[in-house]
Length: 389
Image (cartoon, rainbow, N blue to C red):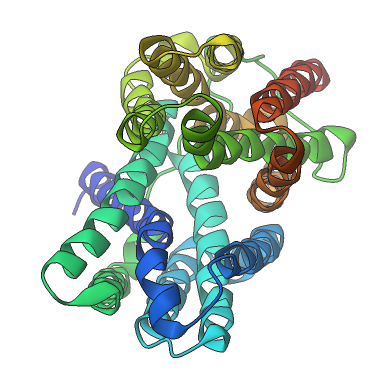
């Protein structure tokens, strides 16, 4: 097989792996209403389970630089896929709270490692177009997970059947990884110093432990914190504070995630011409405009427009910042920085949504203003990182 076909084959495998990464993420919220009464668990325990899993993901992300350097990307992705399949199998057989905590470890370790490993691999070997499409694949997987659970419950298999189906998909993908392990080492690399619009043409020397390295970690924590807080709380704000119907609130929330996924697909076509830094800068401004409009709107169409703008603005931030790492940091620091960014993202996911919950106890309408404040802080950090690197 020639190098171009090998590169294309591996790219398809990577896309499938990122779809599988998103598959469990959207499923738990759909399955939980059937889970907790059957297992006689408190409804609020879902938040604790999610936090524990997110912390395992953070540990996995922060340590991924060390792990990938010793195992290489292919074996790490294979191990992560097996871990995720094992976690889903535990969920499918859950008999009480302890089972959920047991599942959190393999699910968290699997998600953090594969996220960092694949982001690092794509940033070194493929263009910005493919990095954006990679993260669009996560959105496809995250959208498919709830559909699998919904189909399983409607067909009489219950939530356990849905998790067994997803476990089977993970193990089938692990088989594909076993058969293609040799391909990972033979893919020709993208020139890391290839000039992109908006990126400086020079050899980066920044190390992972530099101020820029830790600032990049903080940016990912802030970004994921904002994205997840909007996704988690928008529906509740619309129904409880603004009087929307549940159906309209669900439509608005779906439009937010749909805009992120669709935006990443579209951005993939222009990423190389426009450049990572310009896309992130423009996207951040669009997201701020969307969140501000959400803060000020009270009727359906403006709110939906606000969430679509926010989603489109968020679309380039994560993938383009990831893809820019080899142009900001020394080659030996790239995988470590990417791993820390993935870990920081998990910490952000575990923090701001919970903080927003505390704020909501006192003033639910204040939550989007908190999000806007954090988003403005993120923009300031991105601009400072651009000056550093």
